[in-house]
Image (tube, rainbow, N blue to C red):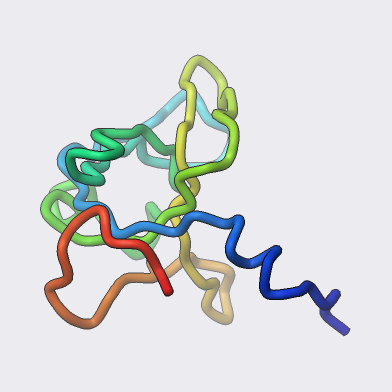
Length: 113
């Protein structure tokens, strides 16, 4: 069973929409990953993330795509790279990650309600 939280706990998690502005391979990782630069608008700016999404996506198709990410976790060192946000996704039956993203063209920087 999933641990229950109260609504105030959920409100502490800052999930925003960003637009991928750069995606490159990250060969230094143990598991295949990309290094992403994501624009979250004027208030947050561009942040970096490492994402293990290489099976379902290639770098060229990621640029310009809107994604959802947690922007208020502390940065995390991944090899030689500092990941600043956690990009969100769901695993398919084989464990390949499919990105969580809005269905419509919402403004970058928008917060999940």
